[in-house]
Amino acid sequence: WTRAVGSGVTFLRRRLLSSVSAETGGDIEAVWFFHRHGDRTPTRPLLAGDRAGDEAAFWRSTLPDPATVAHLADRFPAAVHASYRPDEVFRDRAREPYGHLTGRGLAQMRDAGRAAAARYGSG
Image (cartoon, rainbow, N blue to C red; front, top):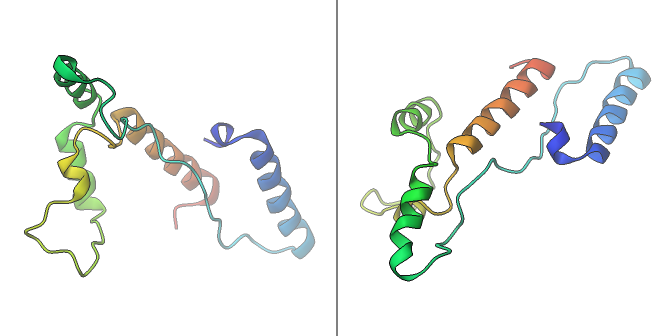
C-alpha cells in the first residue's frame, strides 16, 4: 500500500518513525495515514445515446456485492449529519453506479487497513 503512494513518502515515513524512536527512546503512540481511496467508477457516464445503458451495466458489474456492502454497513455504521432527513435519498445513491467504490477498490482499502494493523497494531 505504501508503494502506491510513492517512494518519497515511504522514505519520509521510515525516517520520521526511526528518528522518533531513536531520539526519544519512546514508543510510537499514533500514526496518521493519508491515502487515496481505492478504485472507483467514473463520476459520470462517459458514453451517450444508445450505449449509455451498456456502460451503466458494465460499471454495475464492478461494484461490490450487496451482501458485502450490507455487512460493512452493519459493522461500520455511517455517521450521518444531524440535518439528514430519513425521507431523503443520499445524492450518491441516485447516481449509482457512478462515483462508487468498486469491488477492487474495496479490496484495496481492506488490504491497506490490514497492512496498517499488522505494522502498528489494531488498537
